[in-house]
Image 1: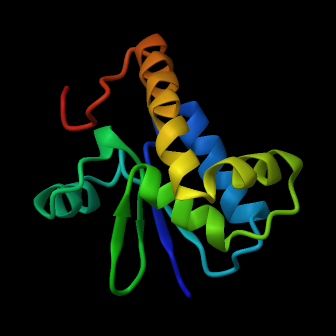
Image 2: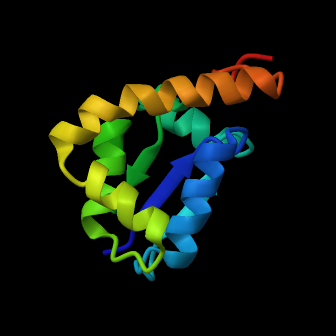
Length: 125
């Protein structure tokens, strides 16, 4: 199954997770796209009701997952060789746990973006 993960490239945590997932996640067809820099993709997702400022997006040919659901779905398909990804995979592959811990990730993202002087919503200047 081919997935595309759309992440916020302005967030160092998001970028690190996306790149590690692509390189070490054991999911050969995973494509990662920086939604902060890809204005067209972000506009298409926003028009479908998926706001990148509220979380990452995972897509396949037929479906779109957003936020904790996106990360949980991705983790259920990863076979990571990386210890950090193994830990995150264990935490987030269960959708209940993902829903519980995901707000903490969003808070960390907000802090990281604030420290970098970037808006939480990539569409805000």
